[in-house]
Length: 211
Ligand code: A8S
Image (cartoon, rainbow, N blue to C red; front, side, top):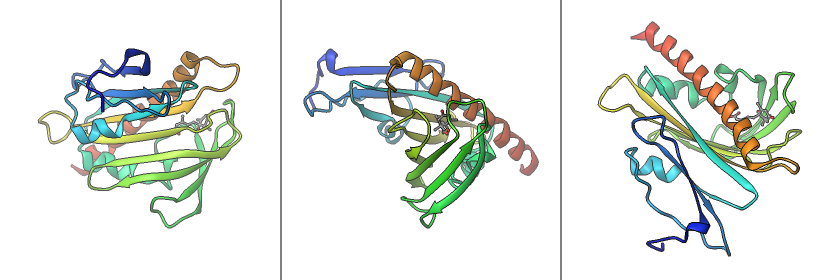
């Protein structure tokens, strides 16, 4: 790990809309080297590590942060359901598990609503950590433009409140031919932001009913 990675090899996105300064670290892989640097973030080290992605020059990477007024356990009860993304993802029309036992390697076939530049996506569960509240999936097929999409979602308690959660969702994806990095990032950020806003509503409603 070089103490001062060359600037040309580093693409760092800081998400400053949250007091915790959650950070998605997107590292260009040059000559096979991946440079890591510990970001100035107040999110736990374990969380930062999950959002540190090596990226190739033809990929884009970003993150969305969402605060939710419900405890981590309530938010996690929604997020952990890899078989039921439609519980909060409004673009998802249907989802069927097509392989696996619910653990890492499980595959789901997602159909999305009309009006999007896609109809279906095949997705593989990459991480399901029930203790650290981490879920990650990758896109392995479908008829969309998001090749090699991979996202990581982590939950952690908001500050010293026991009924608040900060969700950090970072992603890396290939930039489709004929598209710019910026447009790709805006497109994906928009989808992820919508998903997390909907997650907030659903988890907050759930929490109001059970607390
Ligand atoms: C998610 C995140 C994303 C989903 C994308 C980015 C997608 O389901 C939609 C439109 C597309 O063009 C690609 O967490 C794809 O679901 C809504 C079908 C993959």
